[in-house]
Image 1 (cartoon, helix red, strand yellow):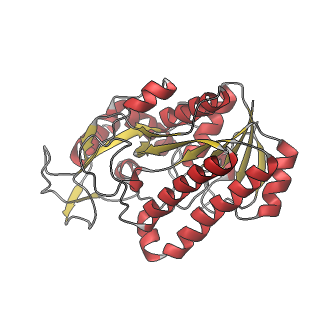
Image 2 (tube, one colour):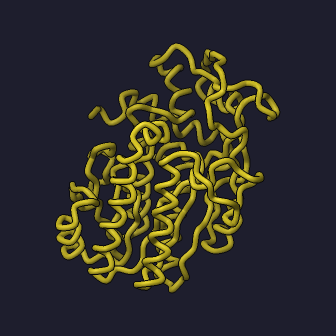
Length: 330
């Protein structure tokens, strides 16, 4: 099966490309490299540098590749930046998806897996979060992801485009080979920030809020290994290829870890003491975000392989300790 991966040079996209190729799929990648890395793209994947907002480029690529399915990762994804530059997010995320869907419809491609986000929920009504819970985003990033989901819904109604939207929580970890991993600029994710301390790249890590109603006063999050996320996307492609109906699914381990638990686990993995500094809560940070991934298990047969937090952090440490500057293209 031929799969076109939009945003395949990014963190989750590149891991999905590796997993697709490892499992025998024929893969082409589209990425504008504004936040992705050319070095993260598997050498066996055909690469096209371009923007999903460029209709002529998309049509040319689709006609050349004639893929059987698409996986859409291409989006801006920094919550803080979206608060400062909301129109940038609407232009790239919503505008780009509109252009992409129009091109897919014209080309007759009617199977797409979409990289959505837990940010569509906003403040959770309950824990664990289920797909039927209220969607009320608290930032433009989440709003654009929700708008993109609705766009897929109406493309399905009008044109028969079948889709699976995957809402995931805190992606983390790195490929087992250690050849690709997480490399953001700026880095905002907890595990890479924590590992920068034993890597000698920062003196300490700040803990935002120590007075939450949790077991140690710090925020609780559901961490899911990037390889498990990649496998869920592949299962969703297979599900659609087998005639599955459109759906929206959470991806998560269903187990939450506090910020302090992540730091202590990183100390055990690295053998180093990680200095911390307590800081005030950040506005809009919920105390807990934990997913119910039961429907993904039922619908896709998805089973996360990385459920131990130390195992997840160890895979990240193998990458960061050997690639302190990421892909070296910053």
